[in-house]
Image 1: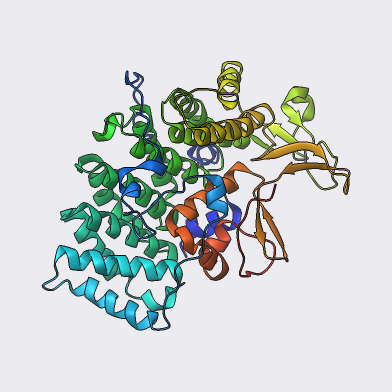
Image 2: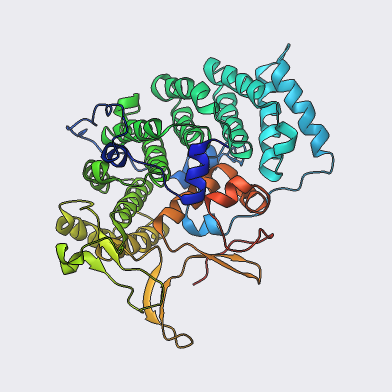
Length: 458
């Protein structure tokens, strides 16, 4: 596996430009910053859960890059059963994709859908090993020609599933420009959004360099800052949501966001006034992540006297071995104003939204506000004291692993990675977490992989 990918998956960190500059290593110049002027109108209210494609029953694991809620994400259904003949079927589909002789649009759509369905339900690294380059070429032909919206999105989903099944040093370099052309030039908004998600996955697992990761984060921020106008999708929520989500995922690879935090937070705060709840929540989750990342463990080399007492956070339960945290930089200068906005969203009561949407907003923004005020608090944090342990419950979002234990999603970076994996793997997340080391190392658990079911434990 590429050194960057190994570093990212083993430590959860890569080296930012700022850190490298301190060490004297060269860094390319930053891309131009996001536009300072804001688009006048906001992303219109079109929920991910109620798009036309979903209403018509056409959205499936093969074409979807979305998870509609945290609860749904953690309670994902198992994939549809695949017959024992899947290996032979996959081999036939691979050959059909590579040959493309006398193929029709409908035939390629069917072939791509079968390929994605098998790779979702099965860990097939051995079956595609050595064929990745030819498959990528085949996927790019479908992506570049855009013969149909469905074929284009299926090809991007197939590409994402391929790179997450068999990460490569070279895939990112081959696919970045074609994917960005779809994002910028396609007439299909769903294709633009799918290309954003595919670009994020290929950046994470496909061998992108440190600078390419940062450049793509800046590129995604341009989309957010312009409400989609930067890619000719003015006020279309789905590409903006995709850009917000992939920015959050990629940022978990960056060690120090001090140079990026203020600008990014400014645009995320602006998106809190969107009329689309999904845009607001995605922006809010990124804000919480920025505050979490602005703190680091206190080390013996730190001169405590040099820091204000308010910038040092201790574990409230004084658990042995848990280090104090120290504020490394200000995540956002106008935190007081931000808290007021988050408080309003956490107590929102409006007829404009459904009861389900209001509940989702309140729950999510109560968590986000709590993390802004106390950056050590992760998702679903509870201050209540357990009668059994005498300690605070803390973050109660967990992935249950049968009766053997749980994986606690107690950090925002963990939630971002879980969401990113689930967007690609959909109902196959459980299978891949058990068998795919790339997935497991992206969100490790202390025990050996076991078959498990995901649920939110309250």
